[in-house]
Amino acid sequence: MIVDPRPAALPEHAPATRRSELDSIRVLVVVGLVFFHSALVFAADDDFYVRNAETTGATFVLSALGVVWAMPMLFLIAGFGAWHSLRRRGPAGFATERLLRLGVPLVFGTLALAPLPQWLRLRAGPGYHESYLAFLPRFFDVRLDLAEYPFVLQGEHFETGHLWFMLLLLTFALMLAPVVRWFPAAGTRRIAGRLVAVAGHRGAALLPAVPVSLLSALAGLEEEYAGWSRWAYLLFFCYGFVFAGDDGFRAAMRRDAPLAALAGLALPLAGFPLFLLAGGDPFTDLTPQAIIARAMYGAAGWLLLVAILGLLDRRTPTPTPTQTPTPSHPTGASASISAPPRASTHPTGARRKVYAYLAAAVLPLYVLHQPIVVVVAYGVVRLDAPIAVKYPLIVALSLVLTVAAYDLLVRRTRVTRFLFGMRDGH
Image (cartoon, rainbow, N blue to C red; front, side):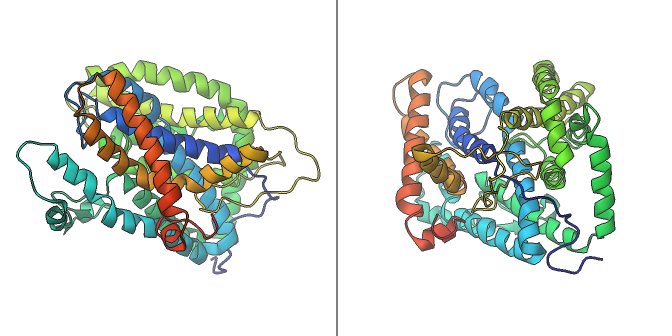
């Protein structure tokens, strides 16, 4: 069994070059969440914290374009990063780093930010005049419910809100560390060998869609976690971890990306009408229409990840022999995928400064964005204006205030950087 803190269960590979597109995707998803949560203010079929008097079904279409792939992509990239982080730090160091980079902002965000949207939800209703300070004890009135693991703290008003992503990611990381420490190295080598053999066949990169599809169909989907089962996210995270060390699978994703794109776009077009026709609760019902719709949804999620990563990777130029790998991202949330030497795609000059600024800001921006969207929406919905005016106003104000809060209140002091999961100097 593996007992060395630097686990032999993780095979050695040639140094990987930096895949800057992974950080770019993370930034895109987090910024996109501002657009997504702003749209929920106008959703006819959603229970967002603040709702506009006038609603529209168009928000379903807007959200559907993103929920299929966005959050699964973040978990997949986190799995990539976990593989590289474990190789550098070992299981104990990896667990400690995850507790600092995810656990600290999770606790801080739950205490300082999560109550505000819930209070504004109540304030938006008629006849509620309780002050925020008076509401706080009721928010933190919790009970233990192990059946909801890892969301074991439950209460009438308590929630982690959008921080569910960080709680799941931290849970998965802490589950992974002991497995890596004690998993036999010989078993790891056998799995790696089989992956290499399978990856050589055309269509191999599409096969992981099958478990995701089955899990989604049979276990159901959870609307409160961006339309995916919490255990489907574990599957995406594990895929990222396993495939990060497999050069052949990265090549398979590049090869199979066009096919994945076609199938990944076709399945939602065919599956979303089934969601609408299923009746009842298509996220959990076991009717044939609901099961088929969820199966198609699950498969589409993985196929779109393959398409996005594979097509972006195809644009990577051939490296020069003098190139050296770039260190992993300071937050440890993303990292390059080990592969045959390929060029770094980092921008240069002014673009490089903007890139570095945003890449370091991803986690704090994620923590900050939803409370700010809710506060802005709480004021904007009271305006006498159409949705076409209110929606872009909420988006614009929320983006400006979120970036301003990060720049002025988070990144400038050591204490606030620590509370938001940042390393010193970033």
